[in-house]
Image 1 (cartoon, helix red, strand yellow):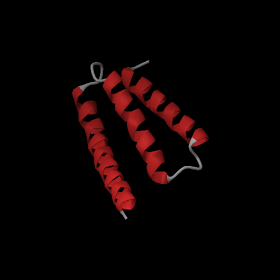
Image 2 (cartoon, one colour):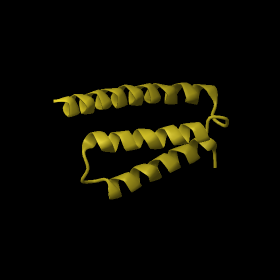
Image 3 (tube, helix red, strand yellow):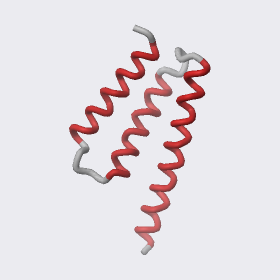
Image 4 (spheres, one colour):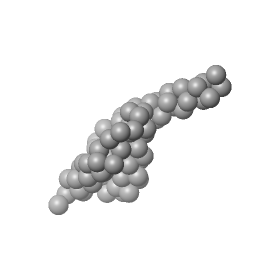
Length: 81
């Protein structure tokens, strides 16, 4: 099995676990948990992934960081009010 396929299989498994356990939670928490799983897998497979795959994954990584930042800012503003 290729490393790319293993990455996709593990990420899909993580998503299935999240859907099963975190179905009733807030959507922002759900997306943050997806992001955390993505970060863990990205770091585990960093050595074995090819350059162009890493660049594609980095795009999703940056999107996740932006969403995480927006969510944290919203929660802080919610606490302040």
